[in-house]
Length: 244
Length: 253
Image (cartoon, rainbow over all chains, first blue to last red; front, side):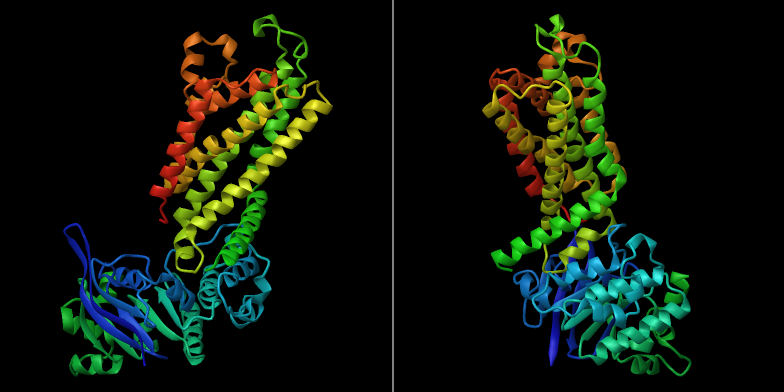
């Protein structure tokens, strides 16, 4: 079953085209990746998807609703974690979660969610005092507290150490295992390869490939070992090198 | 979201914002302690409770002392607290994150406004109580006028604060812009140097600005005079422009 439909999404800022006629669908229960280098248009695409940005043209359906014309139903069923999203310094972990839970009709139990994300011992700690990994887990918790049907994560593991990354990946998989569809935006190819069922590769505002990671790697030739090699084969550039 | 849910949400957000504001010691200090400290220190100046020829026989304790405290309470909360908190939220992505939930970022603006008004009420009541019970501040003679001035002060001064809070993009810009708004207004309102020592044109220009109009209006009603028409006009124009601007130009990020 299709939960997200994007058809010829186009976003232009004056003369600059950020997203050029992008189309893709997301199926229920999958982890769908949107990958590409910084500036490729990934975040703009996702912002249009969640209703934060108005497309220049194109059609978007999230669980059958248009984010621009029916934002209420979309926000109720979508949990979002954006990059660079912070909270007030003195807001405590438990307070944040309870506050956000109150926005939704049938939220998850904040206490249970805190436990699941190993944040319960930080319940009374202010946001300012949390470590990078703890802030990230809180971000995930806030995205899940509304019991969403779809969870969107934008650059989830930026700034985490390798261990923090692995812990977060396990969390994403457990989110999918509860039946939540996941849209993962990343410039980190290893992450997309590890987690995603299917991946849309975006470069210069366009979808240049859309397939499972395995098939993308295979199609790139016998010398390609991973998604970054696949990207290299498709565009002549290496994301890892660009982002280094 | 239906109306009941909206009201419940704003109430929840307001309580949360009030808690957060009070956790910031500098906010409490400037909004609540400073006006009180000024009242007590200035109100204790020898002779301030005697009729002053320079003030046409009025007493300082009935005019410029309480008006200064009140005006400062308003300015601290409306022009510093409200805009700085919101622009900090804007910079950190708090409003943007809220925009992805069923709650609306504008609700956070409303919550901060109400929280600041509650803090203002506490400050004014405390200053009023200490003034009247401990120092010799008289009860305002034109009570209806007093209520009107306070209400119009809220609408116009917090209207400006709301406008600033709606558009300033980050904390650093907020520090600069709020100061640029406050300093000339404070000068014209006689906060730095009492108006009786300033040239006549200062009062004339001040009459066209909301903060000075508020302070002078307070002094007028305190001794029993009525509000001047030009002050009423200033409050009205400021209110309309500020609130319209706030709604029209509000930004999430």
